Image 1 (cartoon, rainbow, N blue to C red):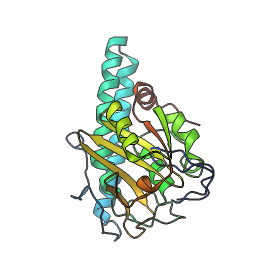
Image 2 (cartoon, one colour; image 1 turned 180 degrees about the vertical axis):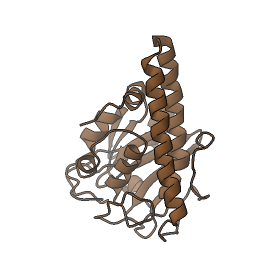
Image 3 (cartoon, rainbow, N blue to C red; image 1 turned 120 degrees about the vertical axis):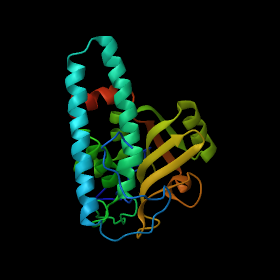
Length: 253
């Protein structure tokens, strides 16, 4: 968690009682060195070359965003709908396959606010806002990282669902009904993302259960904050409105 997460912790599915924050792509797109999609033990600073690649990735995302924005502004309604679908697919792939990969192994710390993967540490709320910000969403990074999760999730996600004292099977039913994609989830005192692709479900977060490993992707069930939390709030990311906001550079408050 980071700072003072009061109310609910930020997880990409998130809603929580009051608390303090604990917590290819397309051709030419820079990608991280191969990393397992599960827990990562490497916590050494990212080599300079990899740090440069991450900055190149961020610049590439910005260029793609500008291209979408320019094309969208001069297109008719039918073409705009196609562009929104294309942008959603691009963002899903870029976040899942590129941005997450760079951050695996970045240590967790309650006060962690690093902007560079594997350099310093990062709390759960700051990890979530780092991913969203580096993907090109105009969000108040610090404000959201330190705020209650529920209002943030309601602002940015769709089909938000809350689960209180419910078995994990209820969350799985929700994910199956919503389909493949990225989700944000908030817990009793944590926040992170959920990725669903077919029968593959991963919980991506900066893990205060394993602070030395920090950012990792792991199964939904098991010894982790998602499974242990009594309260969960989850919403799906990248619906048409959210994707249009990305294309047009709409600022979130």
